[in-house]
Each structure stands twice: as C-alpha cells, then as structure tokens.
Length: 75
Image 1 (cartoon, rainbow, N blue to C red):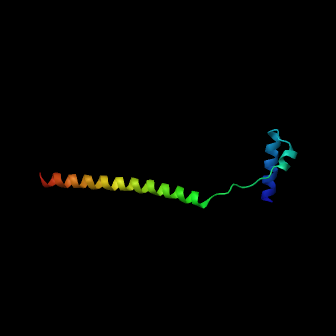
Image 2: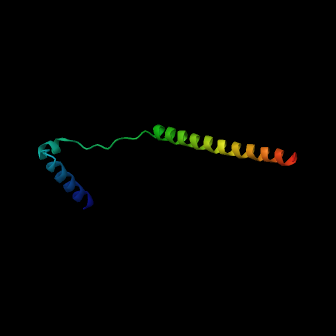
Image 3: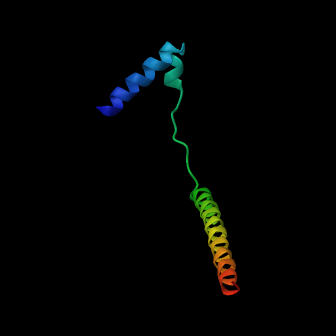
C-alpha cells in the first residue's frame, strides 16, 4: 500500500516536470550499492580524527598540570 502511494507520488512529480510516462516506464530504478570497505575506511578515518583530538587535549592538560606543579613547588 505504501509503495503504491510512493509510486503514484513519484509519477506525479515526474509528469509535472515534463517527463512523459513512456520515458518513466523505460527507466529502471536500481538502488546504489555500497561497498563495506568504503564505509569501514570512513569510520576509521573519523575515529583517527577523534583519537588525535583527544590525545592533543590530554597532552595539553598534562603539560598544564606539570607546569602548575613546577610553579607551586618553587614558590
């Protein structure tokens, strides 16, 4: 039922755009395939960015703590 409504909506929009129904019947609608390796590489790249950012924040905090400790020690 839902796919029938979606198909009618799709046809109505295409007809309004000036595409004839014969052209629509000749078109095959195929879903795009997704490669799992591409998705994995994107996830790895994003995780690497997050890891580097967290590492920079951690090192910055450690440097601030060490400088504060040295400053307090020699007061």
